[in-house]
Each structure stands twice: as C-alpha cells, then as structure tokens.
Amino acid sequence: MTTRRHLLTRSAAIVGAASTGLLLPEIARAQGTKVRVGLMLPYTGTFAQLGVAIENGFRMALAEQGGKLGGREVEFFKVDDESDPSKGVENATKLVQRDKVDVLVGTVHSGVQMGIHKVARESGVLSLIPNAGVHAATRALCAPNVFRTSFSNSQPTRALGKVMVDKGHKNAVWITWKYAAGDEALEGFKEGFLAAGGTIVKEMSLPFPNVEFQAFLTEIASLKPDAVACFWAGGGAAKFIKDYAAAGLKDKIPLYGSGFLTEGVLDAAGPAAEGIITTMHYSDSLDTARNKAFRLAYAKSFKAQPDVYAVQGYDTGLLLVQGANAVKGDLANKAALYAAMEGARIDSPRGMWTMSKAHNPVQDIYIRKVENKENKVIGVAAKALADSGAGCKMG
Ligand code: PHB
Image (cartoon, rainbow, N blue to C red; front, side, top):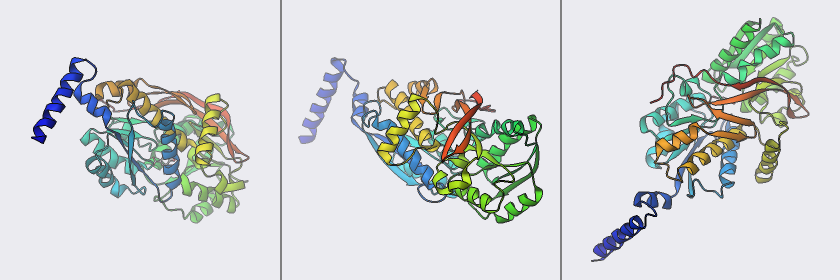
C-alpha cells in the first residue's frame, strides 16, 4: 500500500513537472544530486606540495561559484596517488567504480597519468589533467573526454634553448629524472637548443624520485660546459638547486631549467636559487590585475603563496565551471559539455589561453629569473605556443 501510494505520488510529480514544461524528470534528478568530483593527486612524496597547491587552486575556482558546478553542490572523493605509477590504474579505478565520480581531476606524475588515462579511455569518465605533461595524453592517445589545463612536457623547454644561446651558451649538459616528463622535456629542449646552434655535451639522468646528485655534479664540474639545463620539480628541485650551489657550480656554470625548477621551492632553496633563469607558462610577477587579484585571494585563503601548480589547479576549476554552466549542471550531456570545454577561453592568472584541438593549452611562455625569492618575468619566449598534437584523432 505504501509502495503503491509512493509510486502514484512520484508519477504524479513527474507528470506535473513535464506538463508544466519546467524540467524533464532525469534532469530534475541529476540536478538534485551532488556532482561527484574525484581528486587523484600526490599528497605524500617528492610531489606532495604540488598536489596540495593543485587542490587549493581547484577549490578556489569552485568557491568563487558558491561551491557549485552548474548550480549543483559538489562532493569530493580523494586518493593519494603517491606519484607511484604501479598503482595508477588501481587508484583511478577506485574513484570511477567504487566512488562513481562524474569527473576525475588528476594528476602530477606522467607515469601515474598513463594509469588514469587508461581508465578514462575505457570508462569514458571526464578526465581533467591539472599537471602531468605526458605527450601521449594529448597526442596519439588523445580522447574526447580528456582535457589538459597545464602543458605538454616539451612546451616549457621548447623555448629555453634559444634563450641560452642568446646569452652566449653554446654547449650544455642536460640532467633530469629518467621518465616521461624528463625525456619529453629533453625533447623540447633539444629541438630549440640545436636549432639555435647549441650542442648538448652530455645527457644525464637518475631514476625517479632519486636525489643522489653528487656523482653527476662532480662530472659536470670536470666537463665544464657553458651551462646546465634541467627538468626537476618539487622536493627534488629544491635539493638539486642547493646541491648545485654547495658543489661550487652556481657561480661558474649557470643553471637553467624548465620553470618547474623554481616553482614552490624558493623558500626552501634560499640564496642558492637567486639568478636562475627558466622558461614557463606562468610567473609570480606577471603584472596584470587578474594575476594580482588571484595571488591576493589565494594567499588569504590558504596562508601560502600560489605557484604554477596552484594556477593550473585553479584553471582546471575554471574550465569545469565553464563546462558545467554551459549544460546547467547536466554533466551527462557530454556532447554539449565537451563542446563548451573545447571552445573555452580561460581567463587565467597566467594570461588568456585556449584549448587546442587535441585538448592541450595554447599559451604564452615567459622567461623568468629568480630575484629576491620571486620568479620575475624578464621576457616572453613564445606567444600562443601550441603542442603539435601529433597523431591525435578524436572519436
Ligand atoms: C610530470 O610527471 O609530468 C611532471 C611532474 C612535475 C612537474 C611537471 C611535470 O612539475
């Protein structure tokens, strides 16, 4: 009897809603429930700080919308991916199958991203990449439901080589971690440096996340290149900068890098970081109202200075907000959701950027120099730089 009455009431409500033309029943249901957002980020290990900054930025963009996505409340599900590629598929599967997330935000490490990517391609769940630059995600394995808001691994270093040659450095040692992010950063560096007339004397690498740099620094001292270029990030970056100075190399052989080298580490690295020149799609000192307002609001909310990772997290939120608003919270309307995200113009603290056909940012790359614990802009290395998206076929 109760069941029957319940059914009658429910169908009467549906007929009522439909006849007034207000809402279709499915949309009414969808909008009544919370959007389930999965955060798969590193909260431990050498990239722990990066994960926190990304989450802070993401939450800040949602907070600007009263905490809502297309009018719906949001519920978060979190996994610490530990930057461990061997657990990537398992962790992403937990969020998709157990927690039934509508959108998966993650991650930092390119190897872990490949695990997320496999799950995203197989399940069709919306996947937003707030950092990891692994080429495959927006090249040969690109997918309609996968969008990156950060960079491709070769984007920040592509413009670095010319900057170095312009400063008179004709030969250089390259050093990094041996995994996709390091290998692909080298690919970008090599292209630009060789084209500008530079020579790479030696390519050096350590397995991720090792930080035993001493033997390499000794070898660099004996090779005496004009300069050193590198990719490091997080805790490893802070240690490399300090070890490089402690080995007596700082004033003899200038150190350059993709900008991650000096992101979020300037307090930890102290004077050892002063003067380092890098290329990157963001700079603390960008003199725009947008950047200044963002930095002020972030510092107020989180009692910390934002870095490029915070900006990427924030932009991931901005992109999702644009998509969700376009479909009024009905994230199941995938065609319209993806179309809105593909056409999005993101008014970011880094400057305005758009989405390439392969779903990777088209963005300006700045030249920065560390001065008084700040990444100061000293020039623009590339305007509206797009990744090649080589091999990407959507659909
Ligand atoms: C990556 O693994 O893709 C990666 C990690 C940290 C960075 C940049 C790229 O800062």
